[in-house]
Figure 1 (tube, rainbow, N blue to C red):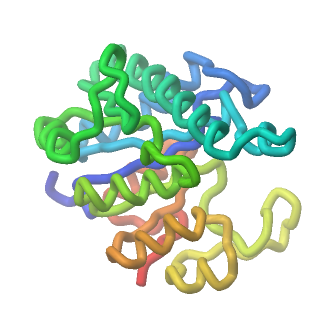
Figure 2 (figure 1 turned 135 degrees about the horizontal axis):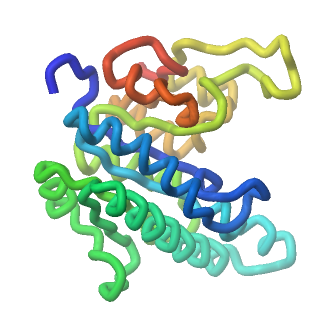
Length: 238
């Protein structure tokens, strides 16, 4: 692992990373594309943990807008993340990457229960660990789950995978004059309400001095370059 800036990472993926062109469902080809990116860094010797969202299968806001109970909507989202975790596990295993899924909601027939020490041991044994079911509690996003798991397994960095090459002061797709930030402080992100991660996740990273790196996962070289210490995306630190 010589020459690597980060040796253990937590990769935060949106559920849409597995979706097809319509943004919904699980497309096996998209899962294979994500698995390919992960395999590249796995073969570099990086220890990889993953948290994935559920936006491709369930959007709680739609339920809330129709009067659904918030906790119920959140639990449904947690279950959807386990489906995504299993799809990603299958794609990784078929690519030759040893993988384990751990769920914060116990469902022993399909995933291990989340146990911090066991997760760390899997990483030490060069297995990719995919964390499902968020934190196991309603009212917390998968962003917060990613920050929590990253701190728990002592990751060197939390990498937020997006479809843009960093954090901008406005939507670069709508505003061609949008300014990209190379670096930001946690306080800047919170004060300016920049769409990096939700405030709970950013605050948790700030309290534990965990850097957040926002990159475009669909840039074939972005993740590898970031791990080698090259300037890629936007780095959020103290």
